Every structure is written in C-alpha cells, then in structure tokens.
Image (cartoon, rainbow, N blue to C red):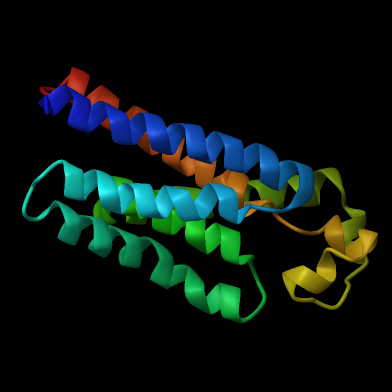
Length: 174
C-alpha cells in the first residue's frame, strides 16, 4: 500500500466521521453508535490490514489514550458515551499523540464556546440551575439549553489538528 494512501485514508475517514458527528450532536445532542462503533472497529482493522507490526498496537494505544481521559466525565454524567467513543475512534485511526492534541483543542474550543454563550446569554449566569447528568438534562428545555455539544468541539479540534499537520507536512522547514 502506498505511503500516501496510508496517510490520507485515515484523515479522510476521521474528517467525515467528526463532521457527521458534529451535525448529529448539534441537532440532537447524540453521537450514534452507528457512527462511533464502526469508526473504532474500522480504525483497528485498517491498521491490521496495513500490515505494520506495530500498527495495531499504536491503534489500541491511541484508542485508550483518547478515551480514558474522558471516562471520569462520562461516569459522573458530565458527557455522553458518544463523545468517549468518538474520541476512541479518532485515537484508533490517528494514534495517541494526535488524539491527545485533539482533546486539548476540543477542551479549548469548549471553553471558548461556553464563554461566548455566557456573554451572549447573560441570564444563564444569573439564573443558576442545579447540574444534572446529561441524560436527565436532555429531558428539560431549561437544562438542555445549557448543554455543550462536545462532538462539535471534538470535530473542531480534529479538523484544526489535521490542518496543522498538513501544513507541517507541506512546509517542513517552517
């Protein structure tokens, strides 16, 4: 398999998945299993098919590095399982370092999103509501309006990181 194909296919697959995920999360605060689970499995299978002895190991390490930092937030009800599985798929396809960089960028995007929302909707700051787990918050329009579609933040972080990497590849001496 050509080196170019080995580099481009993961970027295209992950880009498509995070864009679809962002739209789904924006529309209904859901990242469906039909998107996330095939992403995880196909990432593992891709690295197996590429034949590199360490490819599957890197894929599994990426899956774990991407998802384990989010498990505490998910188990506390602060995010949905789809966010964790989407990050696992990104890690399975693009590796641990890439996934950790996406997590940092997604966290920064979430911080900026929440800050802008707070500035544009000051009533949110002056009308505190008790924090509910995501599944319960989805049932109430008041609480739902406070949710952060983290799949959108993951997509932003992923696409930004892919752009940064492509620029480094195109201009290695800069």
